[in-house]
Length: 346
Image (cartoon, rainbow, N blue to C red):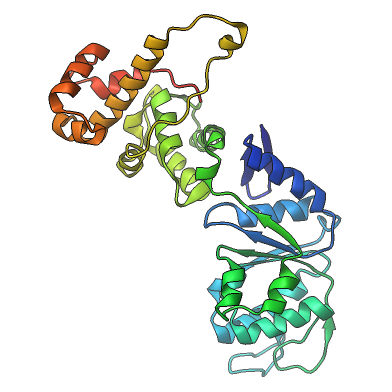
């Protein structure tokens, strides 16, 4: 497992092949002075990645300035990035440096660069080409020594084709491309992230982190996490604030996660390490564990309604009843028993 932290207490955690390759690439490019374009869905960690690049560079003792281009209107973004002179517009009562000047000698991270208006893209291109800026309301050219990292959740190539993003600016930004994989494409990292975030939030609560049940990890690994790592972190914080169990069980997980997780097939379980030593294992026992896990999820999501659970599992209600008995699951405690007794290696 590789864990890389930033001062903001955010991390890049990974043991999956995609994350190992990403972290190796970040290590290679960190000391470069070239512009970086970080692409990834919302919540994948673009600012964290930009911060880590800065921290690993020769500029690490100089400022790191992060700005979301989506926060500012077309009339404000130029002033925010390049600064303004006194009297440049109504309310400009004094000179004010922009984000590029504040990042002098360090790194500026332009997140949501896809939201930069076309007119402003021309001026941003000039900064990349000439490494100079002009404050709003000024004719003076100021040199800037700043490494630029840009972030986007959209495909800039498609925006170029649609005429919404300048092609020359795209090529200037896309010197060192970094693509952050969504969490659903690196499910092996989910248990690691769970451990990290739960430990963090239970520690802040002043408590030891309880054990995580197999069913809870199974639910997290089945869920697609459209909000990616940010959403997973929020889910872990919620559990840490509400869980009073000795062991975190599926009852601690929100129904929004459970209902979506139940629609996915079970994750591919890792075989016990003892198999490498040719230790016998009961195939029937493993299959029964898997069957019990699926039945437990269906009962949990359907609030114990066997007819609904049978629909979710695409079996007859009578068949479900037989299988519940065969797996030894009690009626009232079916979901809890599965969570307690089914071991699902992470």
